[in-house]
Length: 164
Image (cartoon, rainbow, N blue to C red):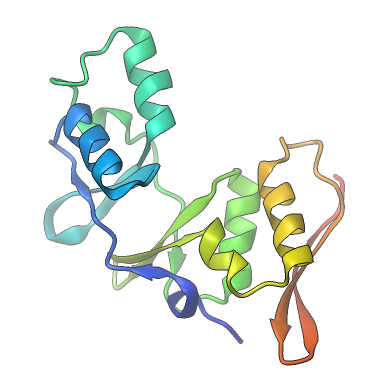
């Protein structure tokens, strides 16, 4: 069984909930990444911020990235997995919520991120393609999918989805 902690990118950089969107965008550019966790005190996850969020939810609506805090775009409870969850749970959350990255929590503190790239490292090329397709399909258009994890010479089914 492969756990989220086994494939996650550990110790992700965070943006503070009071830091501006401009600071977040600069950090994303510096790190060459498309999203950042928004963290409060003691590493508690408040949400996720993507480059697309900054453009679509802030700039396009006339919000000033220099003065708008990251917390302004941290809506709702973040979708997460526990570090001890099987990787299939991360895949299900990514698929069900149409997200490409899922924060990994341990004792209520952010310890890592599982991304599509992390998943790709443990799946066969065919299964990676199917996984990416399932994450990218709008709800209602989800094909039946088979997601597998290579384990030696055989593959184990991690998640399936049928049309509703």
